[in-house]
Image 1 (tube, helix red, strand yellow):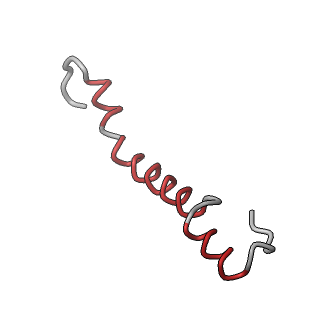
Image 2: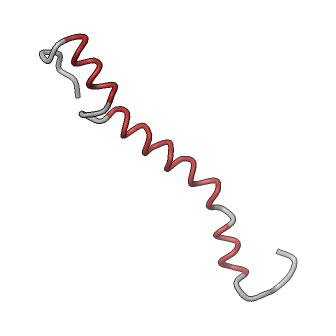
Length: 55
């Protein structure tokens, strides 16, 4: 930055957080949807039966 002030290094790091947070949110959503007890796996077990080897 152009100016020197207390907390400048912390602010440089904190300004990058909005770029990283959406990736964490998206990963959390995917884990929730594709988990063993999630809606995708539950729906596939209902459609294809419990004999289908799902991960």
